[in-house]
Image 1 (spheres, one colour):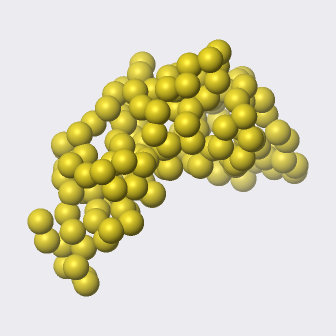
Image 2 (cartoon, rainbow, N blue to C red):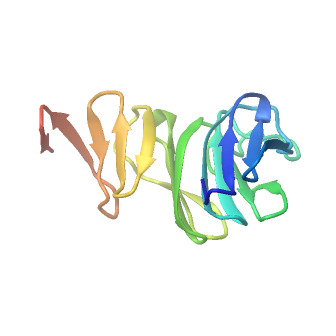
Length: 157
């Protein structure tokens, strides 16, 4: 939710929904693929990511859409792996994570691949940047990010 009058949800078959404070309305996404996450910086700036990319127009390696306040557009991506989570720090700074240890970073112009030291599935991204991976592994907010193992309540390298 951006605010009480502006919320977003994503899902299967390219569905993207917007809540205007009173009702949900489906918004055109130009794809039939599955979206797993959406993050909005403001009412006119947001990103959505998902499985196996989008089809705008027909590039199967693209994985992300951007909302400009009027429409969702394909911004491309450097991976064909599903992206499971996205977190934007601002209009020109964002991160997305996905399968196979995929990490990409938005610089305001394009998504750029980042090295992750893992091939595990990354599920959730949140700042303070902590990524939960299926094997009790976390990705820290260091730049570049580092992989640490979670053993009980302690982090070890």
